[in-house]
Image (spheres, rainbow, N blue to C red):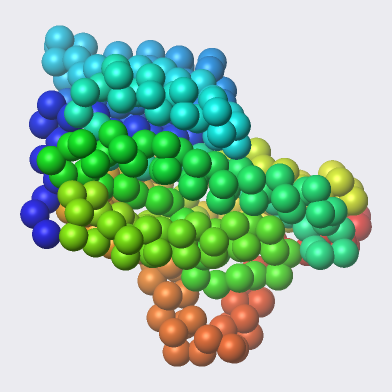
Length: 288
């Protein structure tokens, strides 16, 4: 498959107010690619837009079109309005990179159905929503690519992360099925499986209300300590995967190892993962 030529094109990036989404947007703009920034946090989006304005290439006057679109991705009607706004502002939409999402700590005994449904709404249905809404515009481009950020937990499901793993396995299934549906069209689809990227998502994520906050903070810190990949490095890989229209991309040594482990021992991989994740999944032991 030929590479995606983003010259004169725009990529829509969700979750662009913070973390990976913001970094991906900056790297795209530094290449002269237009970016439609999408997130529910308007102030964060405006900050991302302002930091793009300080990039050397942009500061020299080579400024690609940048637009800000604040929206709750679980609001169907609002998402369709934003998709129309983005398509109107950017005549050639050639890419969509979905980074919006959150996390949730807690065991099945600690979580409520409402908490689990909330995370599924954000991580799964938000991804499906913006993808479906933008497909008509992406199809109008001579070539386009959709990149969904899944997770290492879309390859392996750890204890203590049931709603997160459910949502990421579902995004993986959606991505693969969509790739098959669009096979032979001008739109290609790929999934990215990052291991730990140092964005702070786990520290900003939610936890079951039944968990003591100090215990949740300890578990989140233990998980964050396992993250080794710098956001700029991960963003560069994601942008490259989009341009090369890759179907499957692993980011981080742990992601590659888990990918192999789950293939070799699909029913027993947890035996190898339990000990390294012990502190990160402990949401019951009181803090001394």
